[in-house]
Length: 356
Ligand SMILES: *Cc1c(COP(=O)(O)O)cnc(C)c1O
Image 1 (cartoon, rainbow, N blue to C red):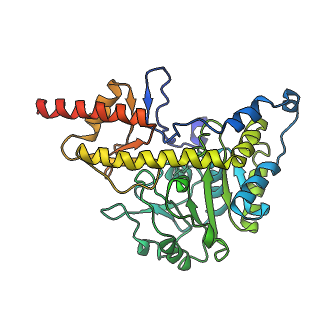
Image 2 (image 1 turned 30 degrees about the vertical axis):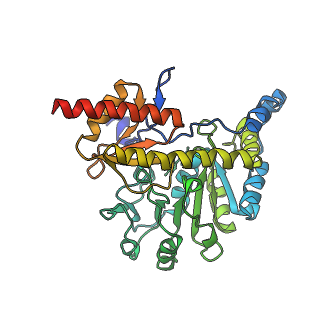
Image 3 (image 1 turned 90 degrees about the vertical axis):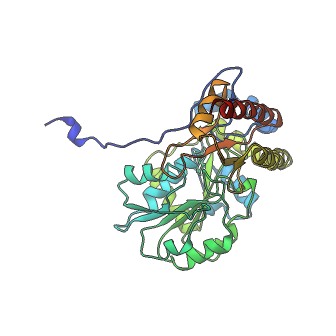
């Protein structure tokens, strides 16, 4: 007998590398290349240090109020957490408690199966079609719940609200979570479906479109009962997850909508330019509505390109799984960063074809 027999063993999620240093171009974890709102910076600089002595507001009321008013929903429809990873982990624990498997796509955010394993939730993956689209019929069956991102990660594919409504109509008796981590960059949100479907939960994050990955704020919007169930689980775990500086930064970010829209539009414009450049270099990709492009090259292997880019100090994301190993997920950076990427790719592809 050993203590190890009672260990909860899990295979953890592997985050993208976080290299530090001057000459690195980081296009591997879908961070925003622009700084957060200067108003957020100022707000946190002006924080009275004495407030750090006290526990934060466990209900995160000011942030909840700001988010609710931004989306035009009631305050009791908003749940906040330490990044949407925290929100999603709580949602899995709260809503996925059936003996039937939860369903999600075979190619999707690679944290879902980790949470399912951690909380001992049975799950089944549904293969995306050849173009990386969800086949809605796969979800028209008995299940313990459904989750997928829209736009999906790492493909960038966005699917229409009408498709999600079809899935909701056939799944009235389980929780359906739509992870809208990237919705600010394109596509239409499912928020309009909340009034009609009490079993729909939508999650969002400040990490990508609001340039605040380091602050850790995520949230969920759903009906009042759902949010209450989530809060009961959260308060049975750790009441004070949202720290004082991040609450302050979050409110300031929501309040500076002009800046948010301007930075978001810059990323979207650069994404569209990057699509053209990548096509010119011999890449193809599903049309992305997110802040990244999931691209494969017509001749050179993705793993080779990944390595060669890294040697030049350019980090993109490579996944070695069965259906995705020919692809690179490239986060959209600034125009200068993307120009450096295209120049490096040109060089790598030329050398590659000469070597072959
Ligand atoms: C980045 C990401 C998240 C988590 O983001 P947080 O930084 O934890 O808010 C959740 N879902 C998807 C699909 C993501 O890409």
